[in-house]
Structures are given as C-alpha cells and as structure tokens.
Length: 143
Image 1 (cartoon, one colour):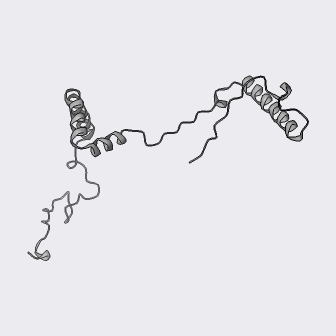
Image 2 (tube, helix red, strand yellow):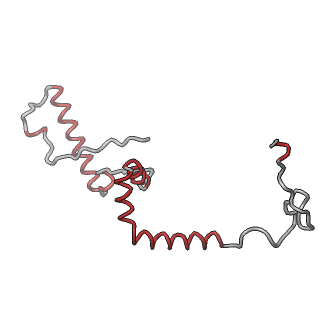
Image 3 (cartoon, helix red, strand yellow):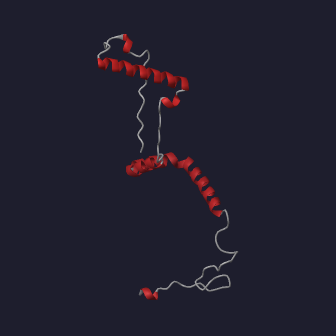
C-alpha cells in the first residue's frame, strides 16, 4: 500500500469544530476528561496497588531477587534518594562558648607548635600541650 493512499480520516465538521477536527476558539462544553478524573484514577490505583502489595509484596521481592538479580538491584537503587547531602560538622553543633573555647585551644596549640619549630620549647614539655583533646574537623567538599 502506498503512503499517499493511507490518509487519516477527517472528522466531520460541525459548528463546534474546524475542518481539521479541532475545537474552534471560544468553544466550551464537551470534550476532554472530567475535572478531577486523573486524581481519582491515581487515588484508586494507589489503594489497589497498596492492597496487592500488602498481600504479595514480600513474595514478589523474593521472586524478582531469584529470577533476575539485575532487576532486583535496579529496583533497590531506584528507591534510594538521588541526592544525599550529609553535612556533619562538630562546629555546627557547638554553642558560642564551646566555639570560643575551641578557638582558644587551637590558637594555644598553634603558638606551642610554633615555639617547638623555632626551638624555643622542648617537645616533651607539658607547657606546649593542650589541656583537652581537640576534635579534628572534617573538610567538606562541594560538588
């Protein structure tokens, strides 16, 4: 059959439609789905799917895992969050007093290390050591 012979049937023109079958400007009324029908469909589908999942979900997961490990892994990855931003910093959880104390300790440690490098203080001396352990702050990388 020739391409020229296969024509799309033209809808009959009516007062509401143009010669090509499209609704004319300003036309109101018939046509299209009722308002809210998509939301109702989605709601009914979700309820039906949930009921089926409650009854067969674990068995379905086990069947996919045994039959197709690749699809099983693909499904497992698909439910993971796409963007995980874990930003854990000791500094973020400190109040103002703790932050000030940490800055003072770090400054004292830097001065003590500078004195050791310059040869002013013996490394074994107690005077260059901080009285508390200072947490090592993670370096955050931006993506």
